[in-house]
Length: 444
Ligand SMILES: Cc1ncc(COP(=O)(O)O)c(C=O)c1O
Image 1 (spheres, helix red, strand yellow):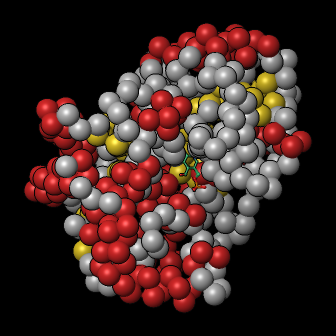
Image 2 (cartoon, helix red, strand yellow):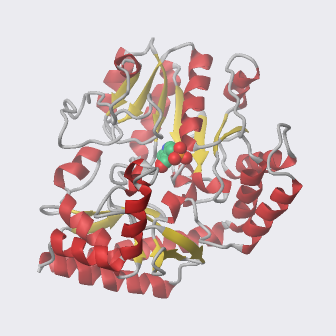
C-alpha cells in the first residue's frame, strides 16, 4: 500500500532540479511561482519546453501533458501553423494601440462557430472577461447583484472568488441555500453582499432564491461543467429551466465556456438546448497567448458602445488573435471527435476496471476536459461540488497525481485532466495501464 510520505520522498528525488529551482525562486516570488494552482505536493514541477503531446521538465523528464495549461494547449506544443502565425504577427509589430484585422477575423470565427454568439469583445484573460460580462449585464439590466453557482470558478477577481471552492473547513450553509464564502482573504464584505450563491443541479432551490432577489439580481453566471471543484456536470434539464427562468425574471443568462469551449466547434453549449445571452471564453482561443472574450447577443453587447465602459491596453492583442485563429483553423469536427473519443475511452476502460476491482476511483466528464476522483467509500453520483468534496480522499488523490508524474504523466492533483490533439491511442493505453498500477498500489 502506498503512503504519501514515501511518494513525496521519491517525487523529490525524481524532480530534484525542480526542487532546487523552487527553493531559489522562493527568495523573489512568494511560493517560487505566481500560479497558486501548482501549490501542491512537495514542490511544483518546473517546465523546460514542450514538443507535441509532451512537456519536458527542468530535469529533462518527459511527461504526457494532461494539464495542457489548464486546457489551453489543445494542439500540444510547437504546432507549426501556430508558431508561424505568432512569428508573422510579431514581425508586423509587437502590439498596436490601433485595432487590427486579426481581432475581426477571430471574432468572426467565434460568431460562426458558436450559435449564440453574434458579437465579441476581447480581454486579456477570462478573469477579466467575467468581470466585463457582469458589468455589461449590470449596465443592461440596471440591477447590481449577480448570481453564480456554488463550486463555479470564474477567475480570481473579488466578486468571482466567492464559493468557488467548497472546503470542509468552512460552514457553507444548507445545501439548498448556500452561504457565500470568500475563497480568499482580502475580499471585502461589501463585495460579498452583491453575490448570490446558487446550488448546482437543484432548480427548485435556485428558483426560490432568484425569485426572492428578482428586483436586485441582474444576471446568472454558470459553467456547464464546473472545472475547479471536481468537474461537476450540469444536467440539461437544470440548465434549460434556469435559462427560461432568467428570461422570465429579466436576468442576463451567461455561460462561462472558458474551459469547456474545447468540447466542440460550438463549445459545450452545443450539446444543450440553450441560447445564452452572453458567453465567456478564454484559454485556447488565444492559441497559447493570453486572452479572454465575451460574446453574445448584439443587443446586450452593444451596451459597450456608450453605457458600459470597458477598455484595456492589451485587449485583443494581435498576437493572441493570430495564434487563436491558427488554432481554431485546425479544430474541425474530426479533431474534437478524436479528443472526445480518447476521453470516452479513458472513462469507459478505467471505470469498468475500478468497478470490477471494487476500488472507489472514477473518471467523469463529457469531453476532453475531465475530472477524476478517489473517494473514501463508494464513488457517489456527483451532482454538486459538495458530493465531490464530502467524499474525496484528498491524500489518495495527491498520491495518484504525484505517482503518475513519476511515471511520465502530468495530471492536476485536484482531479482534473485535459487532453491534447497529438496524443496517440498508444499514449492512452499506457495512461490506462499505469493508472491501474498506481490505483492498485494505493488500495492493496
Ligand atoms: C471557467 C473559468 N472561468 C474563468 C477562468 C479564469 O481564466 P483566467 O485564468 O484566464 O483569468 C478560468 C480559469 O481557469 C475558468 O476555468
